[in-house]
Image (cartoon, rainbow, N blue to C red; front, side, top):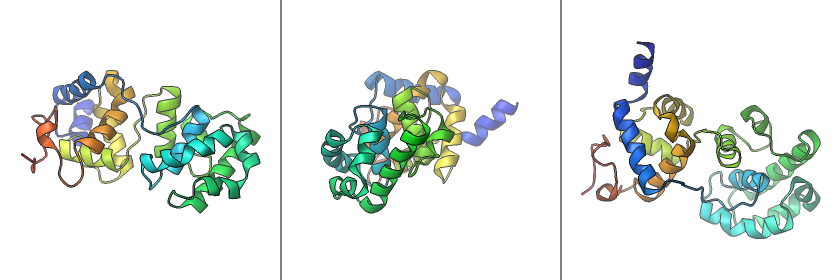
Length: 222
């Protein structure tokens, strides 16, 4: 009864419908990948920090030169805050982000032997790293079944009927309850890509959606 109550609070869909939704996304793209370019856990961490309030495409244009110059915490510290900013000047909020990248690199060297930690609490102790960023790194770098809720996932989850949460934390909690274990590792990438390319904000491409018959969105496009 407790499980059923939690489920009802989290989703308007039945368990079988949620499972079928993700089964269809899996069938189309069995191994979804994030779109931020990186070469190791550290460059992934930096790329995710830089992506806050910016597009992956914009970040990917700036990071090749940055990572060629500094792909480890030590090299990033040596590069210095001002030079980091020069590399990322095309990205919004570059002054604050350059400072965060410099500070998190210092802390990785000082406190973590230059290794990216693999717990959420340790990651969120780094400058510029919140829960969403930590979840992305835990998922992509360390294979943990975390769900990083961005604007795409929040929108898709509310439209489909997975959640009626209005904050990333609320939606994450609901998704954690309802997504079957076999789909959790890739769930966040499937939902991001679905929101980025199909269930878009202004005019969702419902005729192209592989799960339109499951989705509870009332204003489906034709």
